[in-house]
Image (cartoon, rainbow, N blue to C red; front, side, top):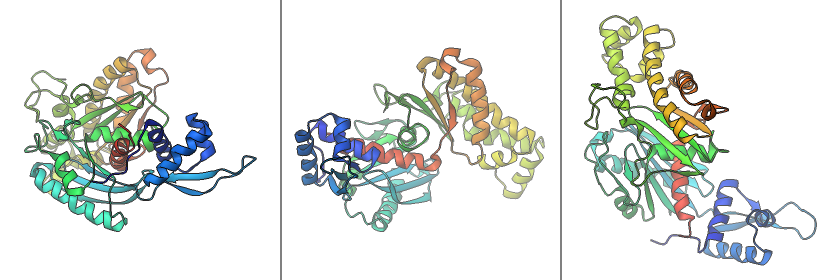
Length: 393
């Protein structure tokens, strides 16, 4: 596959500056990278020859001979695929990670890799055609489970039966004709928030995502920290309750089994069937089922539903408090996959962290909701594959 790549670290740095900051003048780039004028000119001209950047008109005068603007080439197109437990989203971005087109559809990750990845390719083809992107520079697939980044495969993902060691990276690279990165989706969400969300000005932060699964993206020094084998941040399988409910991973009392959206619905069903919650009982009678969104809606006026949500958030906050004391991040970002549940999650998590973490760790520690919401994963996926394509390694 013919893939445009920089040839040295100077070119790589220039590409990342243009990705993150948009069009810049040659003079501005020279100020940032500290290269001599002749060396900078040589590197930029070579990037133009490679088709990675292009001229973008004259720059505003700074006195003397006017400089020219450069920007990432319009040939650069990235595909980001966000696979959730029950939904799938694909997006095409340009080299500056602006979303040019996207599509979303319902799915069930338990259908297995062939069905889900087949749908992803179908949606990607439609969006690629609509965005006028005949050739992709690279793609990222975010999965809701542990991933071996080096091999491009999921490894024993509890919520993804049939996916263990499926060659997602190799298979999708062959289908798409471009490099493919396979990543844990909470890490892509953290990268998205770093690139264009609440964490833009932070190099050390935690990104917690609540849904069917519970995961934590760890960003240290501006990069995702994955640990030795790639499972850092998998807090959903920390034991928080001895003798608790059985988790999808096979253990008991895991945070995910006790506090995830499945546990929330299970306890809401019990409250509805025992008539402790009139709104939940009414909704169950109408629909025959309850969802986490139903619980979130009921929590706006029903004290029983509200306490269900708050109790889960408090337990999550207690775990997060330990991480805050241990890692001392500059920011915590909370994302809730359940519509309407974010503000309640945030309030309870804040309370638990501020009460339980050490004063030095929580002094001036912002704990905020994600600014990007549903877009975080696809923006971060594009960021992840761009880091690879724009690398000279």
